[in-house]
Amino acid sequence: MTIDQFNFAGKKAFVRVDFNVPLDENFNITDDTRIRAALPTLKKILADGGSVIIGSHLGRPKGPVDKFSLKHILKHVSELLEVNILFADDCMSADAATKAATLSPGEVLMLENLRFYAEEEGKPRGLAEDATDEQKAAAKKEIKEKQIEFSKRLASYADCYVNDAFGTAHRAHASTALMAKYFDKDHKMFGYLMEKEVKAVDKVLNDIRRPFTAIMGGSKVSTKIEIIENLLNKVDNLIITGGMTYTFTKAMNGKIGLSICEDDKLDLALDIMKKAKEKGVNLVLAVDAKIADSFSNDANTKFCKVNEIPDGWEGLDIGPESEKLFADVIKQSKTILWNGPTGVFEFENFTHGSRSVGEAIVEATKNGAFSLVGGGDSVACVNKFGLASGVSYVSTGGGALLEAIEGKVLPGIAAINE
Image 1 (tube, rainbow, N blue to C red):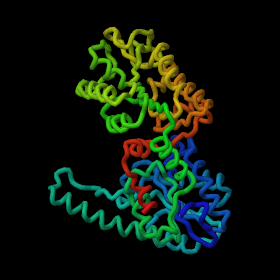
Image 2: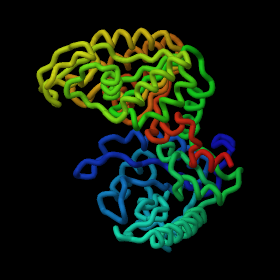
Image 3: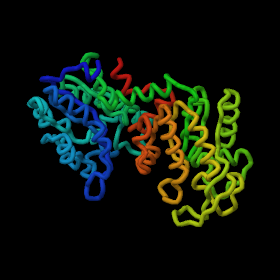
Image 4: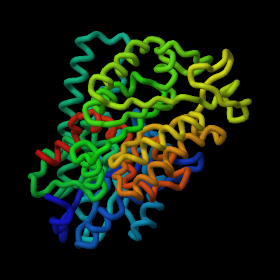
């Protein structure tokens, strides 16, 4: 069932959204992108004459904590939806059940942070550090049983279930996966945002127009190894950049000064290079770097070959030769995936490489390429440089997108498709 096929008239819809938005010290939302992304789904339900029960998490609380209360975002969501939203300050309370039961068409109820309950994540809390294996096993069994009851209770509030939270689709949590089991296939569906995310990932992994180029940034090879190995079976070009550059450079006996490096992953880097060669993948690494004499925006800087970084200096971005090298590969591509900046883009003096990659992707997109940007830092990059509108799709999912690229089945997607 798709959201466009379903008529919500007279129905109560539980909508799992991802309203895990950043707040300042005064609880003002500093970026409401995730809230705005869910509006089309919420508005469709209301326009049909349905009512909405909003479920979300905020932060990673280990119990009820005021700073992670969804009451702080209630007013802003109400303004964006142009509806006075009701609030249940305990999602398991009789008050929540009553408010859900008495919702009229066009009304909206927001439940308090679902992660205030350990049952949402299904992990025991408060276990003593010296707990025995038996105690841990018993606690795990108990929380799993409670999680089922928690899921049933949430499901009982609604007639249908809509998952629009791609950012948490890789979590087998009560509200993202288990709840869906209590609705038949005609009463559970993806929201518009989730639909777009699933289609974008599917296009990049299964509907490839070549050449296919993936740009993988980030500081550690170890956190990206499964993604890289999966991509080696799909891409024509793999650009490895960011902090990972220096692990590869050192593996090839280059001098990297104080640059970030995983010394225990040098053999892994060489193995990746060997596999790329065997599979006919063009593995592209930086040839020069913008280096600094300290990890600071105000550090002294200069450019040098990536394998000739002097002692006391560290690479914090790619250099102009690498920018051109990367851009040439990107501009010739027809499918592009970007995850991870080329350097410490949080420092203004080390944004140039990431910006040049973003601009090359925009140019390739103008020429007909399909481009998917995902992962927190890459999304922050394209937003910071004002390039988001120039790429085909910007994913809201960090971990979820990466696990999908790794080829894993996401619980939140599987639960709807079952």
